Length: 460
Image (cartoon, rainbow, N blue to C red):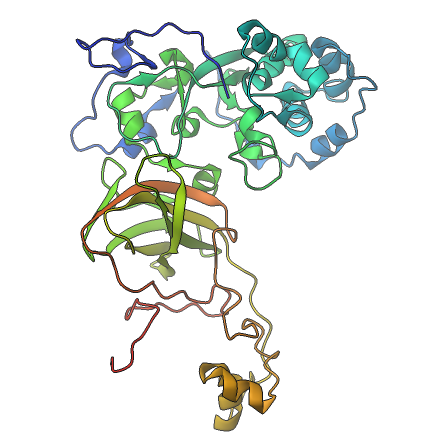
């Protein structure tokens, strides 16, 4: 949460609603060039360096030693000032600037809790609670205090750092053109060896509402400007640290992504310029992706919301997401359909390392299983009364539970969220749910048809 005191303007003549900035820099009102996608526009932008600056690769560094030392730091008292915390405790064990940046990042993201309680009505009281020394003492912040504390500790350690105020995209945000909402978030930039990198200790905190892992998210440590611009839009164009800067109309065209999108090098191959999927009647639309390598897998679902626009979730429907290795690339095809009439929601794509392979079953071996053995192993396909009466031991089927359901079907908890897109459906709904393959089979296979997960008597 971030409380802004910026002045905004609104009138019927300019068509800009309350809560949006009306006076914009000309650099951020441009349009998308012809024959260029929004993602490619960002890829072609060049990061801004100081003279002599070079590209670093902090994600390749093993930070475990620094993180362990930070975890053992004891300040002794909660009344310590931010400057003393940085110089006498957190930064003291380390020699290089980048190690000190890492130490401060980890200490704040680990020790400061994200405060979800209602803010004080008094503006002065709210601002006092977000000051660096107050955040150290309270060990809590509603968002802005994370960045203010990081800046104060960097200043104490002599490391160049800036505080960035801007807008952090929300999952339900739609395309808005050349419109910038008032700031709702604060983060930081640091300059190391002439290179500008971005730090968001609030989003990295294990208690942040968007962090579903319950662990400190290291992706927000020294993120590149070309990646953070997908979700973090600075109020000051020069704080993008990109040349050319990304205009607002292009920013709103970018898909909403999470760290797993970049960590797994997800490529969206057939998404429209404005990331919105529109379906009519029983239409099923394929969504094609490319992943980093064959160690990754995907789960996808449609999250339907209520019709009054509040964003309340009313249903979750799994989609059919399949991976295949094709000509040295890890390709993904997701069939998107909606079982609902005239509804809106989100298509959510989750991506991560494939589930561990199941151990060999009793029937596996050099010789194929006999018909009787196969009938026993697959007995759960018959009616439950017959199965329970036989007293057969189905525990050998490692991925099937007592009810005959596959236990290793992927869910939204199997992999981290990578990206999401709005979906709008009109007309008749899809009738049957999609089939869900076993996510832990030793050998992957591709289901061409039928894609439905239910069959009716009399169907062939």
